[in-house]
Image (cartoon, rainbow, N blue to C red; front, side, top):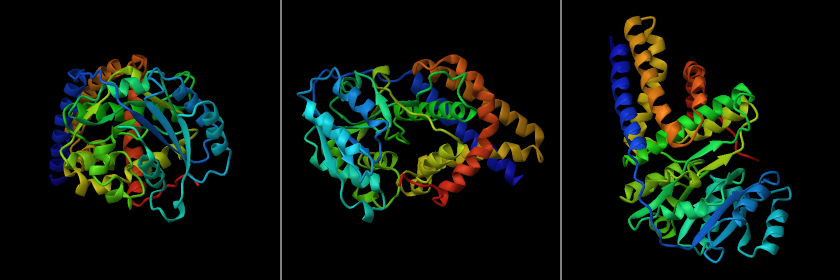
Length: 368
C-alpha cells in the first residue's frame, strides 16, 4: 500500500506538470524587442579541431552587424590545433578573438573556469554561449537578441542532435535524438510558465550585468557540472525574468553521440546536477523525483497492483504522446519520429536508473 501510494502521488504531481508544460508550449509568449544590443559570443573549447571551424564559419556569417558582436574562444589547454584555427579566423575577422585559459589544473569545473575568464573579458551587453561542437544558423544572434525585452535577464534556447536521416541512424542515436527533443520540450514548457527548471549550455544567453550581480560562477564553481542549469537557479533566486526562445532561427544543433557509452556518460554528467537542486531549487528536485518514480514505479506495481500499474502506464503514455506531438510541431520536428516513442518509453526505466545512479556518484568523465 505504501509503494502504491507513493507511485500514485508521484504520478499526480508528474501529470500536473505535464499539463502545465503543454500549456506553456501551446501558449508561449511571442514578444520581441527590436532594440539592437552589443553581444559577446563565448565558447569554451578543448581539442575541438574537428568541429570548431564549422561553428566559427557560421558565426562570421551572421546577419547581425559585425560592429555589434564579438566572438571569444576560450582555448582550454588544447593539445591539438584548436588555437591555430581560431588564430586563422581572427586574422581574417578581427571580431574573432582567442583567449588561452589558465588555471585548468586547479579548477573543480574546467568549463566554468574557461567561460568565467572570457566573460570577464567580454565587452558586450549580452553574453551568448554555445558549445564548440554545436552549429547555429545565420540568424542565431539576431534571433536571440530579439527576445530581450526590457525585463528579461536570460534567454535560453532549443537544441537538438543533427541527424541526416533518423531512419538510417543507429538505435543509440535515435534514442538520443528523441530523448533530447523530449527533454528540451519539457524545459521550454517549464520556462514558458515561469518555472525555471533547466536549460542547456548548447544554447544560452544572459545579460552580463545580471551575471555579475549573481557573482558569476563563484557560488557554483565547486560543482563539476552545471554552467547552465545551476546558473539559471542563481538567476531564479534573484527574481530575474527568464525567457525561452521559441523562434526556429534561434535553435542550435549538436553532433550526435557515437555509441551508448558516450550517451550514458553525457547524461550522467547532466544528472549529476540533480542532487544539488534540493538546495538550489527544491521544486525542480521534487519534480525530477516524481518523474523518476513514475518511470520506474509502475513496473514494480505490476507485481503488486497490476490494474493500477497498467492504468498509470496507459495514462502516462497518452499524456506524454499528446504533449510531444504538440511540442514537436512547435519546434518543427518531423512528426514521424513519434513512432519511436514506444521504444523510448520501454527503455526509460533502465536508462533512468543507470543515469541517475551514475550521476549521483559522479561516475562520468570530462574530456581530457
